[in-house]
Length: 292
Image (tube, rainbow, N blue to C red; front, side, top):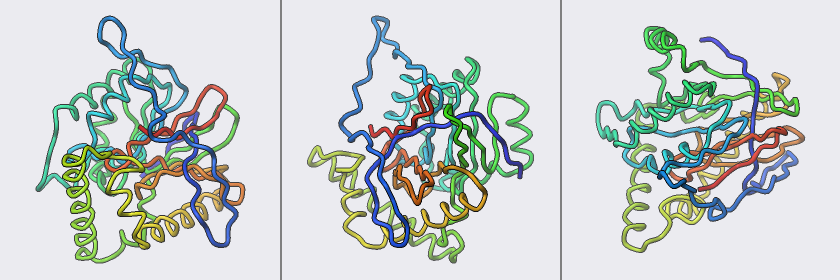
């Protein structure tokens, strides 16, 4: 599988996680309710904001709990020069069952193609849920259009000269190497939490996604998810430092973060199932983590 290099990166931080053995500094992020409402012009079309780079991860198109309508609205209000999709773009695990391709999913694809035709350079890093993109025939098919680049990872240089490794990160998750039974059990538990989250939100008008949703509260009350995310971060940071990058931008664990770990910038873009977050880069190379 090839590796591709690219020009830019972006982001701002989220809450600081505790970490034993390393010095971690948090970069102030926007609270979930600080993202302004979508502004529309008199023609009812979104007023797109030009940005240097946009990073998204774990869209999980085709998964019934994906927040596709919110994602489409967000994409309509931004026009990046560079757009990175850091894995789990389309949820191939749902192909055989539980497939839920909403109308907005097609809208997301249309918006991406429109951006590509308008000059946005789109790069897709392959994740564990969309590993069908590793198929050589699929890659030749995508390459034939010349609109989207697909690779295991990308190298991004921010406007201020920093070098970032962009990848999904599933290869650093020890549960991905566990037995099929373990992976299936974890998937069932995860979907049960999401189902309870949707029901609770419907009954109480509580937040459907973000820091105050039931799913996030439950995960933060359990010790295991925090330990899992911390171990994942340690492995990704170690790999990134070994390869000589200034930072890493990844996804996979659905835990949005933008922190410094012993001087190396760790950006987890988050997801569009539980959090609805994105990482942006401005003209000066500053990174910002946005919560919708």
